[in-house]
Length: 197
Image (cartoon, rainbow, N blue to C red; front, side, top):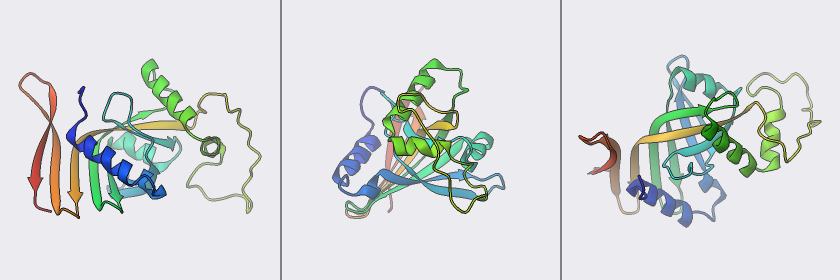
């Protein structure tokens, strides 16, 4: 996929036109809970993996979403841009890249994502287990992190590999469904179909 896919062009344009809004870099990330129910949260867009359509998300390996993705590796994100009135629902399979991943190329992507994060963001991975009850009234801030040291064990990179993108533009009342298909030669391509809004 050398050229930028049509849905990615629309998304990049939406990101650009809404870049003055801080919340435009946040989207909702839904997984399937261990009980079969939806499990949703807001996460930060960390860009696309180099030369791909894969969407990067940083997370703590101790969060519930990791266990959910290990049981069911499929997820969907929902992104709404308030200025341009555009919504993107993107679903696909998620690859979990932690410190135990044996692939050196994936280790490099994880490390790049770690260093691209602010020091304040990196410090979050040193705190107590997310989602567990607080044992102290006052959270401890006695953590030290060498800014030049690599990713800590709890830092995890998620790569969502899109398989379907549902694009809705409320200003133009236009909706397009993009679906990843495979041709007779086994090569992937994106099919687009206009649908009713």
